[in-house]
Amino acid sequence: SVPAALASGLSAGARRGLLIKGGAALEAIGAATTVAFDKTGTLTEGRPTVTDLLPAPGTSEAELLALAAAVEQGSSHPLARAVVAAAEARGLATPPASGQGAVPGKGVVATVGGRRVSVGSPRHAAEGGAELGALAEAVARLEAEGKTAVVVLDENAVRGVLALRDEPRGDAAEGILALSRLGIHSVMLTGDNARTGAAIAKALGLEAKAELLPADKLREIAALRSAGTVVMVGDGINDAPALAAASVGVAMGGGTDVALEAADAAVLRDRVSGVAELVGLSRSTLANVR
Ligand code: ADP
Ligand code: MG
Image 1 (cartoon, protein in one colour):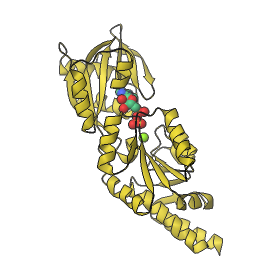
Image 2: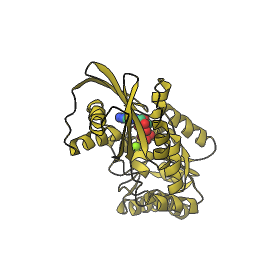
Image 3: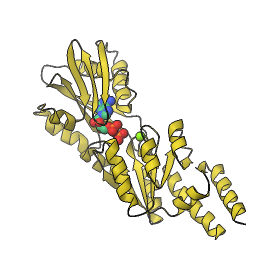
Image 4: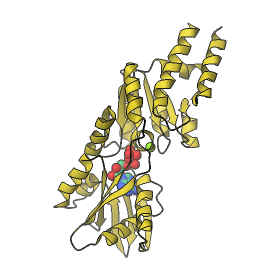
């Protein structure tokens, strides 16, 4: 019977850590034409580390890192945690900071020693009129290596650049190849800059859409939906609206409760390959139902 075939498909999935919240979700996953992935924490580990310190003339590496850590303290963004951890690892004393605030998709700002200090994307710094000078070339090189470069501004003076790297998950390329073998197109959505996004996407074998603010991600999903059935995969940090906007939202990994609630399905372990397995399971279950 139909209910029995559905139930056996859902429970076969559950045994493999693949959760599907009912028949409608299963049907939509089986019909998927496009999978959109969040980058940070979904295709990548979500634990960036500081790889390069490029102070401007007159600033030391230690001063640059301590200043950045002072501003990032109190933010739970993965980039912020990496900067604070790097300063701690070097035993640096961070100057006292107050009034920390985030500019979503752009960076953070705080008051340090009576001055307005910010850490954020090179694009955001340039929009504010900051001159990167000789550091612009270094930023381009770091981004082409798939690293995220952030600029530290003291008022509007550039104090230096930090680069961070977030490693792709071990099975990310394999998981995207498995989707393409199922005839499914994969896209990465990221707030990161275009060069970094392109470098990572090239290594993983999917299309990149970069420099997206949260509202842009929703617009991209709506545009993809007008052409097919879209699965959105996210780890939960800021992803709940995107998961809800897709035909089907899939939460990956331990994730957050918010993501699990907003999602229609979940891959319980941090495995990108689990997404193709979800599609395969849905298709074979539907074949038994019909
Ligand atoms: P993602 O889509 O990869 O999760 P976000 O939208 O969180 O990216 O951030 C986009 C960009 O904004 C980052 O690549 C970085 O340049 C900048 N940014 C955001 N938050 C911070 C932060 N706490 N410190 C420094 N830069 C940040
Ligand atoms: Mg994420």
